Length: 289
Image (tube, rainbow, N blue to C red; front, side, top):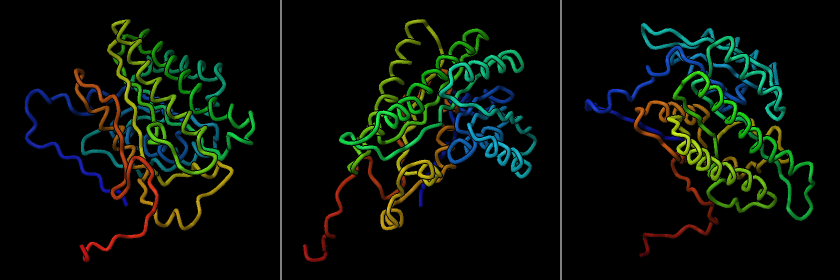
């Protein structure tokens, strides 16, 4: 199980802006909002008073999430954000542009983008298919780039110093040792590079828009339901895993920073795990040392 504790006590005056009040009543777009990290993040943003435009290619998942929101509690005296479900294939550039155009026209622009949607497939470099490789890059890389570009345009047009949060992976910082996972590593490593590229280009145009990359370790989500494999029961039972709510809490942590602070990279792993995968040697009997 995960064990994440964040404590901010005796807050000095310089940290008065470390709170979600700066985003209350504003609009966030969350991709892959129908389940897993996307759903958990949407719920937490709504709880904090942020309006959420939830994108997912599966409309039934968005409907299920919308129906569950009646049970979402908020802080005493605060107002829950409004949820706007939008069925959208984020690999369709025109569809993404239509959603951002609607947010501009109907809601006054986007303040937060959480690029969460992604896939994992088992596709070898030796005998994998170009179709699978394109699927990886189209969803995990190109779609994020299109959403980030449209978020920048919306924020700039509406004079919003917004925040783009990319859900990356520790797979973007290390090589997964399992067979046929290297294209996944490549797609996530691309996000690591492109996040820094976004920050660079934003600085060149004197933009105050923030870009944060959140790289979680293993997370207990439905991502393997779309894959062409499932981890063995032995691996699953022995592998510590984060909950989607843990990653959602880290999204909130990046958004709570004051205007002068930007969390560029946040790596989050479940207690008892490591960033780089290691072999499993025989246990060492320390009592004989």
